[in-house]
Image 1 (cartoon, rainbow, N blue to C red):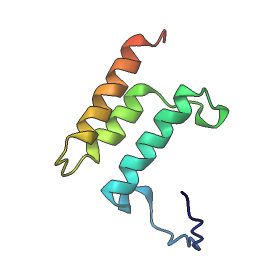
Image 2: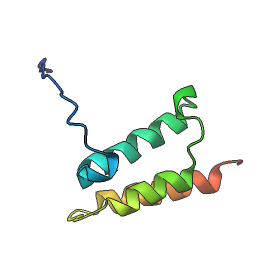
Image 3: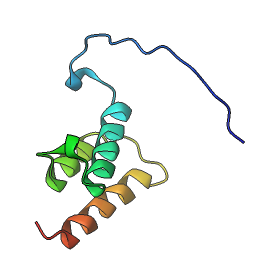
Image 4: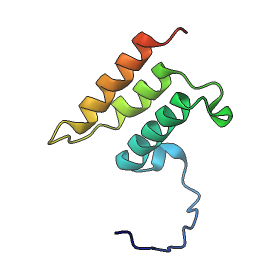
Length: 82
């Protein structure tokens, strides 16, 4: 069952480097997904760029999910023809 949640999002004007680790990691995950779909809006991104962004934002990873994501990106990179 789903529940609609509506929230106003306000741009604080902070630079990307000033965002939280969670935000930067989520950006890496979203970018990876867009790369897998060959989204035209992700042009210029590489697996290495996703790995760099995610690796810098891993932080505490109690259950190892973020490390697992890094491994998944590594595998996708190895399978990529580029």
